[in-house]
Length: 232
Length: 318
Image (cartoon, rainbow over all chains, first blue to last red; front, side, top):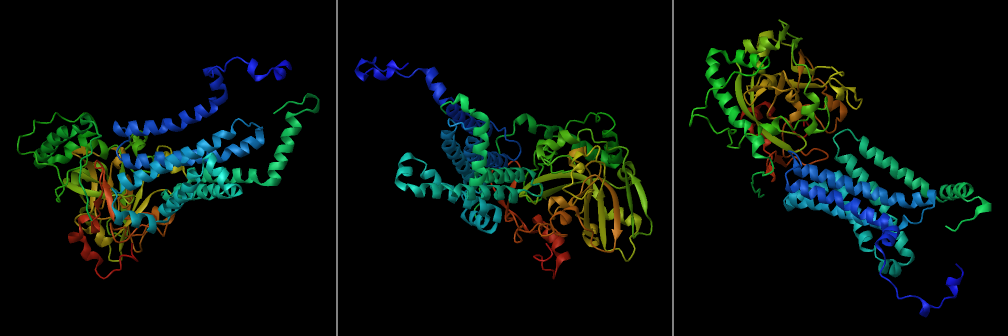
C-alpha cells in the first residue's frame, strides 16, 4: 500500500472516466435525495394533469406542496444533529440539497396560491396575505428562505465568510414560521403541525453547544474504543 | 373584480352521468308526488329503487339554482363531505360512513313546546310533503356547491309540536355513537355536535329538514337520515344525523362556538364583508370549477332573510 505514495504522477495510468459503481458509492445518498425530493413533484404534476387530485384539486395541490416543503426543511435541519449523533460525514452534503428542494416546494406552493388559487387577482391576494395571519406567516417564511436559497452556492459562502453562517441561521425562523403557518391554516385539529413543531424544538436543543458536546463525548466513548482507532 | 368562469375538466364523464339517471328519477318523483312520493323515498332504502320511467324529452329541466348556476356533480356531492364524526378528510367520509346505520331512527322534538313528540323518520316522510329545493351550500372553508335537496320546511315540524311563548331558539343535536362514528372518539371536540337557530330563522321558509338529495334518499355522508339545511348560513350550521330538537329560551352553544369562540359565531350568516379570522370570505370556489367567484351576502338569499337581521351589527353578531 505504501508504494502508492512513491509513485510519481507521470507513472500513473491515464485517468479513466469514473465508473458508475464508484459514482454511486460516492454520490448514492445524494442521488437518492434528488430522486426522493423530485418524485413527489412529478407525481403532483401528473396527478393534476390527469385530474386525480379529487374534488378540490387546488386545495389538494396546495396541501401536498406545503407539506413537502415542511418535511424537506425538517430533514435538512435534521442533518447536522444526525451527524452529531452518528458521526456520519457523508450525509453533510445532503443538507444543502434538502434545503434547496424545500425552497422549490415553497415556490410551487406559492405559485399555486398566487396563480391557480387566486388567479393573480391583486385585491384578493393582498387581502389574503396581509389580513390573514396564517398567510402572512407563510409569506414571511418565503421571504426569509429566498436569500438563503440564493446564497446556497460555494461562491456565496466564500464571499459572505462568517456572515454566511449567521445569515443561514434564519432557516430556524423560517421553519418555525412554516409550522405556525400550517397550524393556523388548520380548522381545529393541529396534531400534525404540533408534531412538526416538536421535532423542530428537539432539533434545536440537539444543537445547543453543551448538548452537542455531551452527545459527541458519549458517541466517542462507545464508537471508538482506544485500542482500535479508526480514521473517520 | 374580475372572475373568469371555466369548467372543471378533471371529473371523468362517467362520474357525472348519474345525473341522467337522477333526472329520470326526479321526473318520477314529481310524477309520484301526487300518489305519495314519500312512500317512494321510504322504499328506496329497503331495496333497489323501482325502475324509473324514461325521461320525457324537453320536460327535464336544466338543473340549476335560481341564479342559473348548474348543480354540482352528484359524485362530488356524495364524495366531498365535511363530517368530522367520521373523518376530517373530506374525500374519505363516504367510505368511513358507508356502514353507518340510519334505520331505525327516531328524532325527539321537545323542550319548550306544548306537544313534545318523538318521530320515526318514516313518520316524517309520510306526514310532511317532501319537496325539492336547489340551494347553494357555502362552506366556511371557502368552497361551495349547488345541491338539489329533498325535504320539508322545519317550520312544518315545529308547528306540530306547538312551541311555547318562551321558546326563542331551537337547539339541534346529532346522534352520539362513537362506536360507529370514530371521529367522536377524538377529544378535540365537545361531542355530540350541537347547532342552533333563532326561532324566526328556524321558521323561515328557506330552512329545510332534508331527507334526500338528487332525488335519492340521503346517504350517510350527507347526514342521513335527517339533516338541517340553512342555505344562507355557512355549511357547519346545517347539522347532520339529527336525533334531538329542543325549543329553548337562550341561544345554544354550538360545537364550533365551544371549539373556537372567536372564529365561529352563533349566527354564521354567509357574509363576504366579515372575514373569518384566518381566511377571507370575500370569494369562494365552486366545487367543479377552477376559478373563484365572489361570495354573495347571505349566500344570495338576502331578499328572503336579510330582514331578520335589520338593525343588527353583523360584525358583532357574526
